[in-house]
Length: 73
Image (cartoon, rainbow, N blue to C red):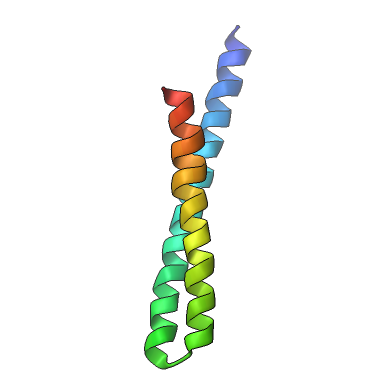
């Protein structure tokens, strides 16, 4: 019984960490895209913005809302 609770807790913590890492990575990529856009590198800026948006979606909605919140509620 104790091991089941430990496994569920560790799995939940891994999902929270993964959601946080994806969200933080997405924010970094969005910031980098703004820097590249300001320097005139439009193609790189758009690529980084798109990839950052995908990471933000995966972190906030995919893992954060879809997985972590579903486990809590």
